[in-house]
Image (tube, rainbow over all chains, first blue to last red; front, side):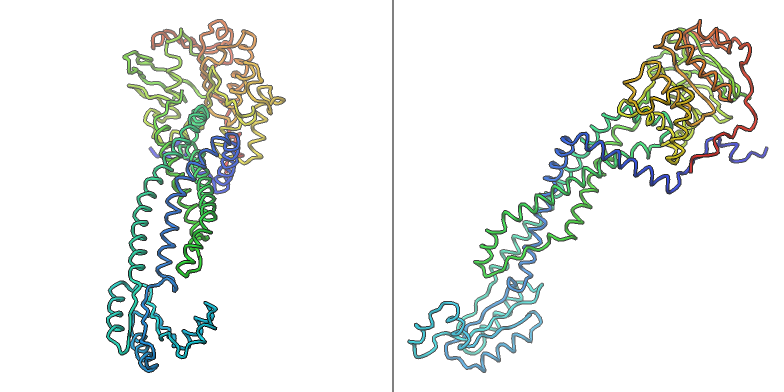
Length: 320
Length: 243
């Protein structure tokens, strides 16, 4: 007996058209807005909680980025300063400069001649008159070699050995401890950050899951009616996933605000601290990419939390 | 072959009680049937099984020739979209207007806003509540709330309309009005099954009455005038709407 597919399936799945789907999403988004506005107190609380949970790991990430940038920045990049004996032959200075410059690990070499050292000293200290009393320039020539980004402590050691063996060198000052310290701190901060990101990310997921669960409880009757009139599981889930999204994004916004406040607060003392190391304050990383990643992960965590709640509460729900 | 057929349907609950025992019954397209019996007789179980809110322990339920007891979870929503259901406690959403309550099944099936408004108003006109479309359910009387429930059940123009004690909370006059509404839908070709324990009321309707007791059928009394009337040919009223 030839039976058409329609005869076998009296209730064909009507795939909603793209426009119908867009309308549905737009409507649900509107409703989500209303619901969030209605329960503004709760929503704000959720946002703040999620925001705090996100701000900590995100802030640590920024800190780690800045520490890493500091080790990579030109001023902060490790290097060594070679002081020559007073009255050393400028030829010897130039020779060593050339040797160091030719090495792969060296980014640049700056030579400060005896005369330049004196001029600089006078300029910075205003002790020009005092120095005028001296017959000879008491300041030595020096050169400073800065490592390429990515060069490590061993490269620095090798360089120091070369410089130390050169003619008429009085002293080689290696800024190794600074490098090592920052590298170590960066490593610790990275690990702590990863751990905190995991823990607090889980926290953010659980907060949204709980909040979405509450939203489901508040709308259980609606879920039942929707099931009864033939809403698909996707349709029933949708509003709650939007809740998760809104809670997550709101949390992301709060996190961004918290981080900017924190940056404002630490800006002045940090500038002072860096100033004492002769560095300019240039906080890196709080940019559009960072914010985009922050909001994207906030949204993702929110939706994951919502999915957890929906799975837990709506699976096997008795309709009547 | 009837549009709805129960073949030896048994429903045993977890506590060992039997909601239905080997029940067999057939319902023609466009017929109107009352299910009656004391509470616990199996009326609600019958409707729940038909709505696939629960599955029978044994037996088959055929709707349009398909055994709906084995329908997949994925197809279930599409099956339910073709049924209208009315309950004693009407299940209206308190935080939505009458209009939005009635519109719910249409939103689920993705109707255009224009068609939603047109259909909702048509359904509300039919139950005589067009003037109250903007009100919230709590401002309506019980009878009006029940009629909103009916409007929601019929707004998609389902081929099958089920009602579980729709007049349970209403006085006799309002009850008669509500039953009259169901009769109107039957007259335009909808298959209507109404569970009611109000024997006097349903006797007066002159429709088929199936009496249940302890999950079994004790009598099947055919209707008099107008009952079991076949559906009009070419039932293509709902060509509009979904996209």
